Image 1 (cartoon, rainbow, N blue to C red):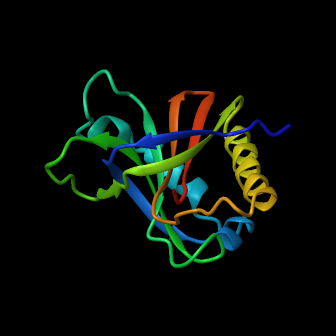
Image 2 (image 1 turned 90 degrees about the horizontal axis):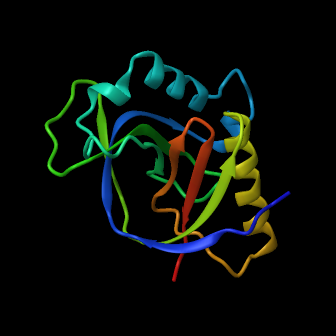
Length: 159
């Protein structure tokens, strides 16, 4: 069952971590999917502990979607990482992405991962199909994980 998103305004911030370029059509095929492997590498190599986090109190993990080629059908970058204070000292092998300030719709999910994230993204796609007057920005979108079974997907929208 789809829950209604809520609206929020976010300030800009930066995330550092590992990144891949993909497209939604590639993610539907296990032979070409890249996002699952990205998260596997992120956690198996303990990147969340080796990156200069914003502070000890901020243990959230982020998945940032950026570099959109066009829309949900084009290629985009996904970065698994942690929020970092500007400027950061580069970490070998890590990339930094800047999340845009602006208006976001937030879709919340709770339950077993990764199924909860998959279901929350289905809610995102369903919402925009049912609300064509709400326009996505396709600048930056992000997932924030506040616990092992909680995710909030932030979708940038035009004001």
